[in-house]
Length: 398
Image 1 (cartoon, rainbow, N blue to C red):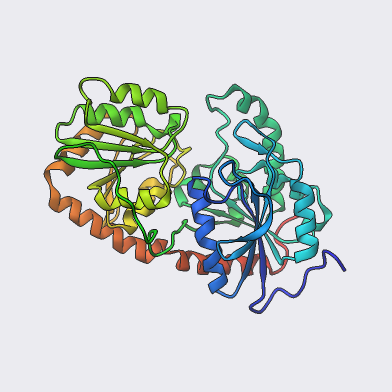
Image 2: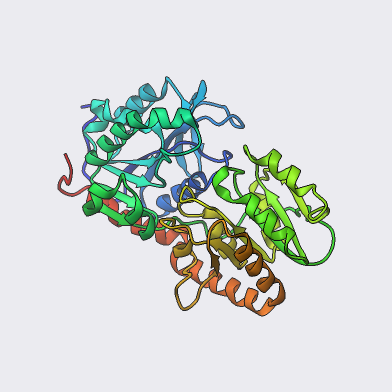
């Protein structure tokens, strides 16, 4: 009968991921999912994914991607950073009935995933919620603040229905207000990446001259602290900065980079593909992630730097996983961590790393070892499969 769940054992267990986007859409969640799917195939699982069609890759329908069946739903508009896709619920229902997954893996935040609450076919399945980030209900967007109460009710219903919830760091799990009532079913598993960067890195256009090469990669958003990084570089001679990405802060960043105290020391090439980012990392002396709010839940770009043995400089944002990723308080940290929104502390760390190449080497090597131990996607996929097995046991939620 359509929608009936087959036995949950053996090598043919099927997992249906509900994601927001897939690459080439930029983002850490997208990169994680793209690397997770083939890793799950290698474990003997059969993953599939329903996501939205990206503007840079608008083809819809079902076609293979990243070693899995992938269905992309057409997007008609964006509302408060969320894709509006009227066809999503029909595609989800059809995919569940025809493909008959054993488990539904919801990657949040993603308002389209809430359609699983309304469909009998999905409600018959066990759910795992992957909690990538809280929705910042106190964010700068008035529209987001107005819509959050309705979102919160649906979010709570999904968390109540889930058998397990995966958070990406202990710090984020402990500080998340939405997760507070559900701590008994929260598992902490980090995100991960494939062992190797793209095979064909392309050179990046660094500012001319000598000095410490500092790389930033990410969306130019208010919480990324790009303005603080620019001020810190301006206060630190012998530092060059490559800002990779795009977003609402890009214009302000370009204007600040053009002032006399930074002239010729900052390059802003815009968003780059994976090969170009790999090339930028290969030439970087340091990766800096100066975020100022816990909207930076994890910091996937830190893993990319650690994989490439590039030392990191990040901020100790309360409730964020960045310091945990770098093992900042451990015996072998992969980078330095400073207070958020503290330009002087950021400048002092840049100067220290500029003047101590031995420290940079030690941090980079420690990061590479830490990546191999903790963040290889094969290890993450194996640990996640253990959580899947717990989900497929006796029901643990309403």
